[in-house]
Image 1 (cartoon, rainbow, N blue to C red):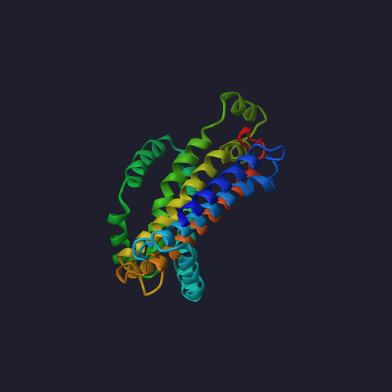
Image 2: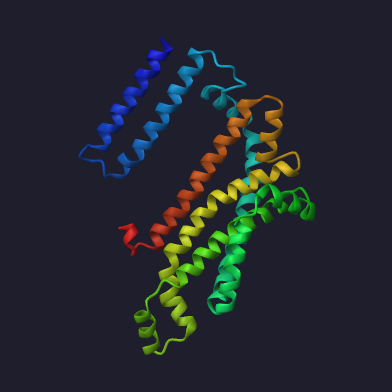
Length: 279
């Protein structure tokens, strides 16, 4: 019966989403937000029904209700892990890496020698596996959040750098000639023409870096951390076969990543409202 119920729930969610997506008000923000919400709720309900129907071992796959109960019970501990990994490690490293990348991009923009030298090195560094760099930073900076922030800064540095350098070159010769006709030097041209034109590229790098920041902060904790942090908790809970706690951390990481990406996207819409991609 539970299997039939799961099929009914899936069919009902599918039908409702199709009706909303093809309805006359499908372009309204509320409907556009409701469609993925209904899909997510449908997946959770089907997951719950199938786990209970087939009596799946919680070690293999816990039910969503078990995961939710664990999140409520372990709320203070999950919040401490969130602060340690996301706020201290990921966000700090993201800001440091982004500012450093932007500064180096400005320097590279003024020197063809730096541009030719930095970008290939950037591609090489971006290809380095985190499992190789994270232990080195832990040895250098200790096991607390500072080493995780350093790992994140290195991971986000090169995507932001490459996109910023490419964006600063995304102006036509006619536009630059017009600025010279007005008597504008390098800095006025940079601030009034080239930097605004580069914003879509810069935000593309920032959005790519959001996911890298979270991955870097969590994975780096596998190689050394105090007794707090999402990566530490996932590793220890898995060893204890507390898979509901592992999934609780995964859910929080997914929500944090989605919120972080969404925040950058909203800022992008406000800043690059003039770009065709935002129309």
